[in-house]
Image (cartoon, rainbow, N blue to C red; front, side, top):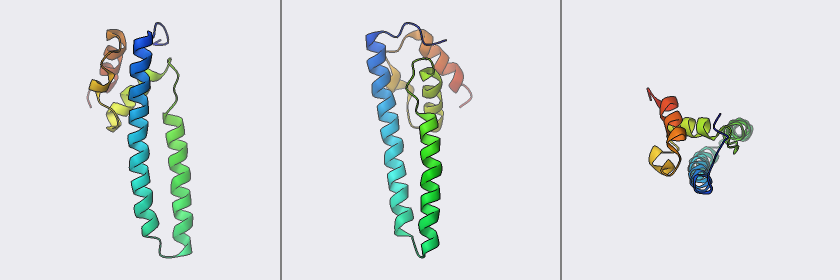
Length: 107
C-alpha cells in the first residue's frame, strides 16, 4: 500500500524519525530498568526484572520493523504512543502523511 515510491529524501526522513523514536523508547526503557534494578530487594526481584525485560524485548522487536510497506502504520503507532511527532515526518509525501494522520485521528 505505502511501499511504492519512497524517494531518497523520504527514505532519509523516515530513517531519522524511526531511529529517533526507537532511541527515545530505549532511553526510557533504560531509565525504567535502572529504577527497577535499584529496587531489587531479594532474588525473586531479579527474575521479575528478567521477565519484564523479556516482555519488553518482544514488544519492541514486534513494533520496530523497518519495511517501507509498514512504515506508515509504525509511524502512526509511534505518534499515538508519544515516541514520535508528526513534525519529525516533515518531508514525507502528502499521501503518506495523510495515511498517518488518518491512523492517528482520534488520538
